[in-house]
Length: 209
Image (tube, rainbow, N blue to C red; front, side, top):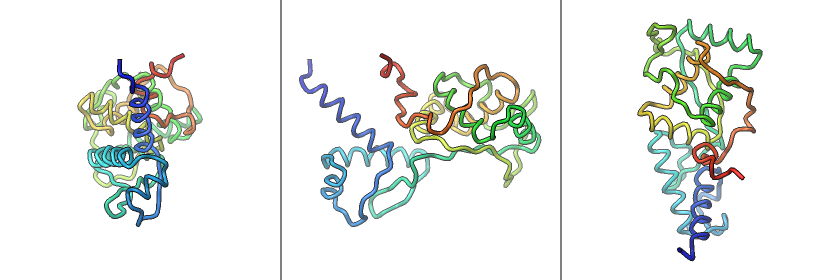
């Protein structure tokens, strides 16, 4: 038995919190000063910075560059998918039918996908809607967009990687299933109900009593 197991678990938890949370400090701060400001060891801070930089690089996003460090600009991520006119029209109409704002519908659909991860019926690089491939015109501004927590974004990226598709393909599939009536569960979820810790989505068994 490892006598330091609890400390190791706490360290991993602490690194993760620094990775998924927004924090800031004076730009000119040294690593020692920054660690002191955050109340952590320098090694913990550097590990969190390395993990966050690796995640941002993999996703092709950067937040705000500050010298040698990166600062995530928000505690949330904005996800979106561009739509052909016919699909966008059906999307807006169905959201009106359920009397929920489109951004809230998309956020709710993504939350339940992450809670009960089941690959959407179609996760292709193009829209496959009602048996037809529909191309999205370049430069179209018709889209579905919503805010999710960074924890939900990490979980979404995880499942996209697991299914060897892009996060956008997963979002496209979730929307298509909703429009075609394949969605079995739908309840409105406010932004505050989304989990900030990706492990709540990826490892729910750790949080059961």
